[in-house]
Image (cartoon, rainbow, N blue to C red):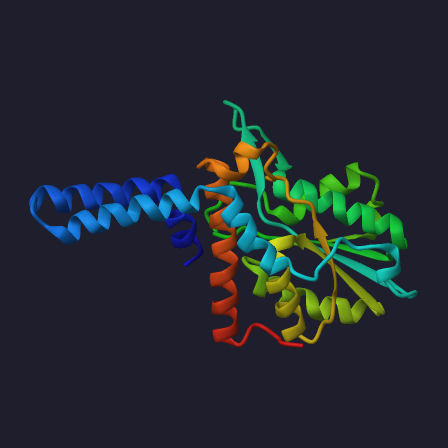
Length: 259
């Protein structure tokens, strides 16, 4: 399902939709339905590639969740959970490898380090496995850990989780770990649009968390970025739609806990 959503909201999805409509119209030159289909495809993708529209819908997902401040965390033993998206592994001709975080995880690592310094957390859990067994990239739990160590988090306070394949897996695996750590507060670090689903997924496992949203690494810079069709706009729309569909799916499966 995840791969299908990302494909539909991509240039590949656009090409396939246009090609299908063109072949339909070619085989039925007088079909009004084929013409309407092509028009709707053009209109839909024109809307999806406008950053301002995707950002506006995305802000509804982040509503009332503000950047974390020191006063948001009560005194007591605290653990930080950082959810990874995916790592990136480069390879040379001798098959040597070098793995790093992607842009999304870079901002999550930075936010986790900022929170760590605010509260001097006892533990930081770096979470994220490969979404598919054949994924050639390093697990994001490892690349996130390496980034946070580089940024100043002591390795002795880091715990790495790499078995999960999605947000639900992360909550199921991390919940008993948090109970064993005997902490009083849990701060959850992830991207803004992903936060609402993450909070509910951990809540379904009996873990109440304090949200710490990372900054968006793909934000628009100029006015033209906001109103003109672009790859940035399509990426924003795809990430927002992925979360909306994820919320619906998790709720239907009973994986989402309500307040």
